[in-house]
Image 1 (cartoon, one colour):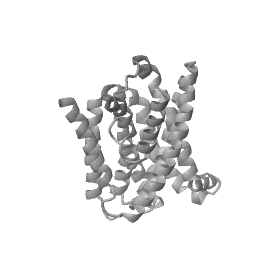
Image 2: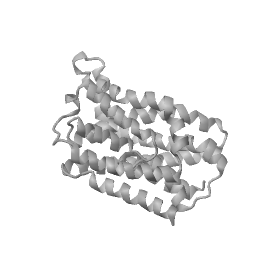
Image 3: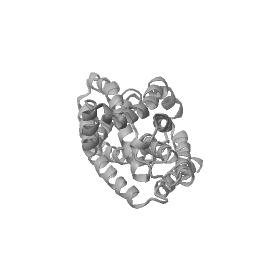
Image 4: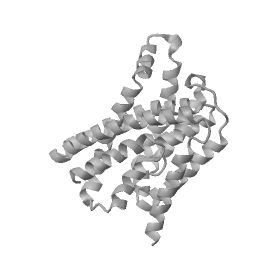
Length: 270
C-alpha cells in the first residue's frame, strides 16, 4: 500500500466507521472500486491488523468526544446509585464481544468479497429505512432503557460482524425500536462502539507490531491519526444532524448505501 492510498483509505475508514454506512464494506470495496493492486500477502496477513490500527484512531476520537460521559461513568463506579448508564453500556457491549470472538473471522472470510459486501450494504440501507419507518417517536434517554433492551441493542450491533452492515447504524436502529430519541440513539451507539473497537485493537495490534514491517507500522500510525481526525469531525456532524432532524434522519445514509451497493453490483454485471 502506498502512502497516498494509506491516507485516502484512512479518511474513508474514519468517516464510514461512525456514519451508518459500514466501514467494513468500505474497507472491502475501496480497493476494488479504485482498482488498487494490493498484494495477496498483505491482504491475507496484514490487512486486518492494519485496519484495526486505524480503528484505534477512531476509538481515541470517540473517547475524546465523549470524555465527559466516560468520566461520569467511571466516577459512578464509586457511587452505587449512579451506575445504571455504565451497566447499560456494558450489557450492550456483551453480545457483539461474545459473537465477535466466536464468529468474526469466519464471517469475514465468507462474506468479505466485493459482491457480498455490496449486497449487504444494500440490505443495510433497507435496514436503516425500516428502522426509521418502524420506530416510535422516541423520547427515552439512555438511562430509561431496561437491561433487556440494552442487550437487544447489543444484538443489533452484532450485525456489523457481516461486512456491509454498519455497527453504528444497526445500534441506532435497535435504539429507535427501544424508544430512544434520535440524539440519544446516536450517543448510545457511539458509547457502545468504543469498547468494541478498543477490544479489537488490543487483540490485533500485536500482530502488526510482531510482523517486523516498519513502513507498514508507520503507515498504520499515520493512518490512525488521519482516521481519528476524520472520525471526530464525523461524529460532531452526525450528532448535529440527528439533533436537528427528528424525522427521516436516516434517509440520506440509507440512499447512499443503496446507491453505492447497487453501483458495485452493476459494475460486476457489466
